[in-house]
Amino acid sequence: MGPSIYVKVVGFRDVERHALNTLFRLSIGQPTSYTLWTPEAPVAPHLALIDLDAYEAVLELASPDAHPGLKMICVGEGAPDHALCTFMRPLHWPDVVKVMDSLYSADEVMDMDFGDTEAGFGAPSDARVCLLVDPSREDRMYLRARLALAGHTDVDEASTGAMALELARNRHYDLVVVGLTVSDMDGWAVIRQLVDLEPAIGRVVVSTSDKTWHMREHAEKSGCSAVLEKPYDPSKVIELLQKI
Image (cartoon, rainbow, N blue to C red; front, side, top):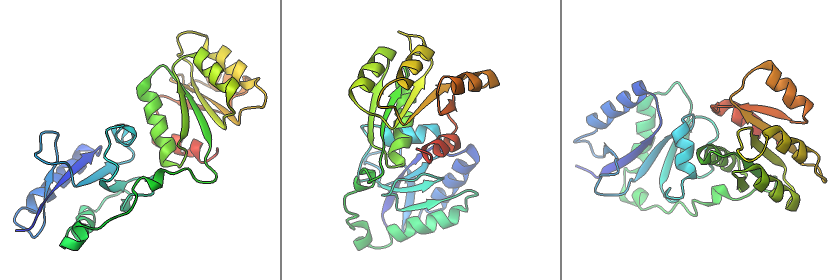
């Protein structure tokens, strides 16, 4: 028997997890076997399977506790540069396992130095400076993770309107995303002041759970470039980030 590889699985639909668990069970006794990693496991995970369409996945990538050197296979759009491989749905799990086997088929592969795995998050020449304004830390972390995956790592955060305005007066931003639920000020008042700043902010985007046409019309009249609906749709967030 070969080594047992602990795999951290983040996200995925129930039917996909069932298929993956079946493949893990079938790997027992093979040259390389796989075990689902849990926090109670005796070792750190050797490999991560990340569903980039899952909310918890981007939170995982943004977490300060994330292991920067962890080998990663991703599913979906927007994979970080240091991902070893990316698959799109519909998934053919044997193909995924084949890639996993190729990583651990020989000792020299297991010991391979993949270089500086943080390099993928380095700011490219077209990286943007961004500000996230929202009382919800979870929502800010989600957007920060999506920005990082797109190569935009220079991100400031504000939980209140006053904090956002103070930051924006002292630094120029290419993108500001404002949640209307800030508690200390009227959200639209914050947006109006941000839009009126000189030099002008590149794009001011409002995030809200209000999906009505009236909301979009109000946002447009207030000078917003777009409306980002909550709960966040990964495809819509990616579409927005492609425009900044």
